[in-house]
Image 1 (spheres, rainbow, N blue to C red):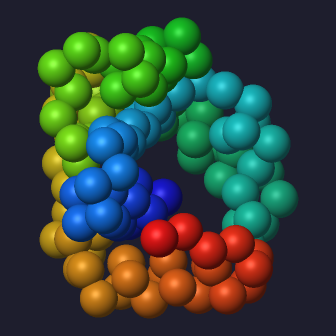
Image 2 (tube, helix red, strand yellow):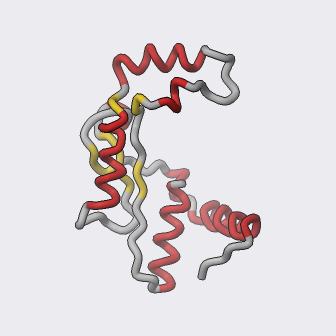
Length: 126
């Protein structure tokens, strides 16, 4: 999703669409997503490990919403910015600018992903 957000910003800049694309992640928020397990893990194992880790590394679902709210409402949000928790490993903490890993900055892969998505959905932009 981050690659899509960055590619959308690049396309907006190139085509002069005038939009600002930003992305955000909640960190490790205590929601039902974790409680319901993880695809590919033995039943219950991922949920057990997650519950143990949650005690020290997670924050509430409400706190997980803060980076998303920041991205959506911050008047000075920069085009192509990424927001998330600022604590250890970006799993919890106050919202702020998040780290964009080098893989997400791969322009050729982002273009290919965008093109394949257009092909599969039959929806084309620009």
